[in-house]
Image (cartoon, rainbow, N blue to C red; front, side, top):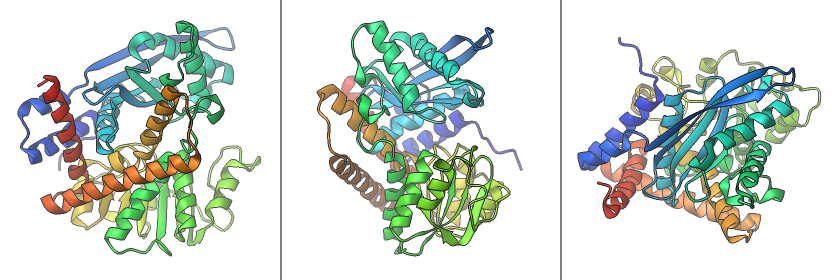
Length: 422
């Protein structure tokens, strides 16, 4: 058996090609969408606290802007590489089109382990990165946001640096900011809320009650924590969670609020991990986590977590992809054959970019909405998108992923044709 291809860019290209083939699309559409429109690589020198200078490499990819300015997060991670950033920008293009946002896809990252930096060094890096990007980003061209290992504080530093360069306030430059600093209510929990909504809608389609449903989650960061709280509120049982350091497993279920408090409000838990949660046992690996029998699985860490090597052991009815690209194409096929209903990342985790869009709109209007308004608008957009994609899946006899890509590419292709791009 040949080794499975785990290159994220090539996976994204294959997913786009599959949807184009299903649509019998003009070959020029794939020809345009298979590569990013623009990519920037920058070097950011930072004077460290000990007086030495380290240079960090960063990237920003703008995939396609037929529907509007590029939109997507900035991640800080030691494994960031160019093909990953390009792939993530491609998935952002699809994601924005899936939920009907007037955005194209963008993504960025810096090769760094932020845990190794002091707060002062992290601020210098963040300001230096946005300064190096220069006019590549703007409220009208490319709007960054938080992603893996970045947060509202980092966004605030970047916005302030950009404002100093321009000489006036530009709150619409970046989203995911603190509510007190031009942010939007509901943004922090939006991706997790969207992942829950996706799972809820999928459960309804297959006649699975959420009350008593067993939920397994990979990761316990921003996405999983808020999704877990909503699953718990719906009566589901969070039976297993695994993060970077290890896991917590209890077949009888764990209280999501108590788990959240144990990780984030416990001064003794300096690593902010689920390991050691009272009444739970550890989970030795991600493979062991995925093999736990459950009704709903939420992979919410990084890409390529479920592959052909472990997909056969996955025991669930629904997967709601909280992360970007957590399932490889080979694993996708295996899971489809097993009858697992997969809600793809471009729909399941689109809550974040949807409320980022709301934040951007509020910034441009300088008029801010209530939490109830934000959540109601998010609910309507995601439920409508799910219904449209599920209907296409049934009518065309394809997977939810292919149906989502078909919907998105059809919208993008129309705009490109009207613009005269193709």
